[in-house]
Amino acid sequence: MIAASRTPTPASPSAVVVGFDVGGTKTNATVIDETGDFLVDRMVETPSRVGEGPDAALEAIREVLQLVLHAADASADSVRAIGLDTPGPASARGVIAKRGATNFSQPAWWGFDFRTAVERDLGLPVIYNNDGNAAALYAHEQLFGGEAGHRSSVSAIVGTGLGGGVIESGRVIRGVTGMAGELGHVHIPMDGLLGDGQPVPTCNCGFVGDAESVASLSGLERNLLPYWLSRYPRHPVASLPSNDAARQIRSYGEAGDEMALKIFEQQARAIGRLFTIAANFTDPDAYFVGGGVIEAEPHFRSWFLDTVRAATTLREEQVEATQFALVSDLDMAGARGSALAALHAIRP
Image (cartoon, rainbow, N blue to C red; front, side, top):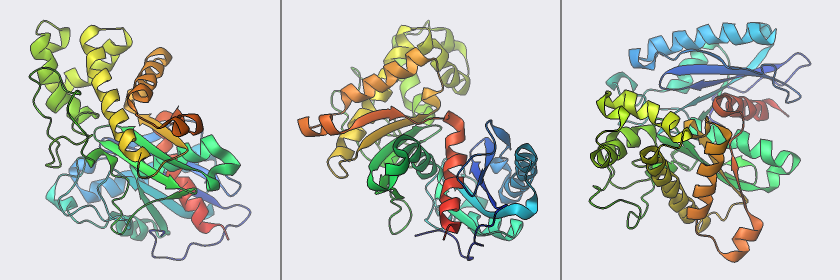
């Protein structure tokens, strides 16, 4: 199902599609032409302003649209469709969940039809995916290329929350309400994962012991740091505000800091347990890890992926048939996946 109410205009020789990735802090954009070539090879972004409400977020989208069209040397008249993604949970048609979401917590966002609002504001058909699905689609197509339509994959995207995406035969699995692939809110076994005396982690969504409560920036700040700082009270980040401390931990992990590595090992093992569950209901060709945790030095992200792989329990046949990979192009994956979804929608 394609989340767009208008009929997209068929591609013409000068047609382009714009993809938007609207996050909690930034909105970034990209442009793809009708052949599938991306016309922007860098981040083009503005503050998302989602914390100021829907009107400000729409203004930010208009602003970054002009910036990315200029960067791509494309005209506004050449745009045939818009790909849009936001963090979930949201419906398949781009309506933010009635309880809000981690990055859309203000009451003005609860149940807000973001896709329709962007469509009306820009006067173009808008194809919606959540950000995890968009990044998953991009990773899937980058890895499998011409075979993408015959392959399946599961992606875990580590950010403020834990996004995800399930691709089957090259198509995003959305579900009846659009909330399929919300892997962050899958409950995972905690036995053997938590340290001695470590409380069972809680999630912003209200769940206890789901994957996001461990493997996310919010889970790190809310659950992991307080516990591990009680074990390492003299750590340099102990004197920092919790948000700053959480954001600095990765640099300590890259440097081999003992406490930081224990934290990231716990996150990687949580993702491995999540993938173990996925292996028994989707049995995919590939498992992807993406997001901020891999925007690190090569040695660190390789170690993190290896730790995820080691924590994923697969049958012998699955080990031989599957692969683990990182989502390529890091922060651009969401916008590029959104653009690809929109391009697929306008192709005959």
